[in-house]
Image (cartoon, rainbow, N blue to C red; front, side, top):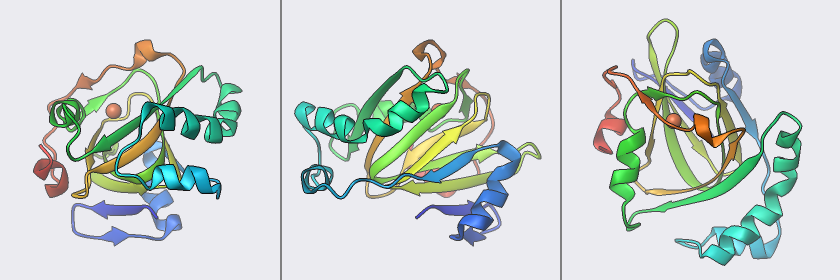
Length: 184
Ligand SMILES: [Fe+2]
């Protein structure tokens, strides 16, 4: 289940509280159940996935992609992050700084967990941990960053309308959360 933290130490687990805190950003957080198919669950329980596993996971969950196609999504892929992945630090370094994108950032977590930080319109910062079976839509232009939890396990589908919008535009906003700083 998602967890939301404020900079004053407040922690919310209840979805109504989390939705209220996310509302100024128009961020949508939804529960997208993962099927109970034993083959799929076995794959997702592994410490890392093969290329063939990627295809099986995508096939199992493409009914969600079909829904998104109606609103213009054209591509999806799967990212599989784990502690000893070659190049992990460099990859994370691209996104654990405050940035925006020209397109929405849509992620569906299917194993592990990830942490998004956001800057709200009043310049306050919040930190949202999302976990397996949760989908998030971060609107284009939202100032945010991303890092892993200490377990360093994150498997997620990414959905794109147009990959040309998929570049980070960096900002200089200092990040106030210890979690993101520890991941740098
Ligand atoms: Fe991003």
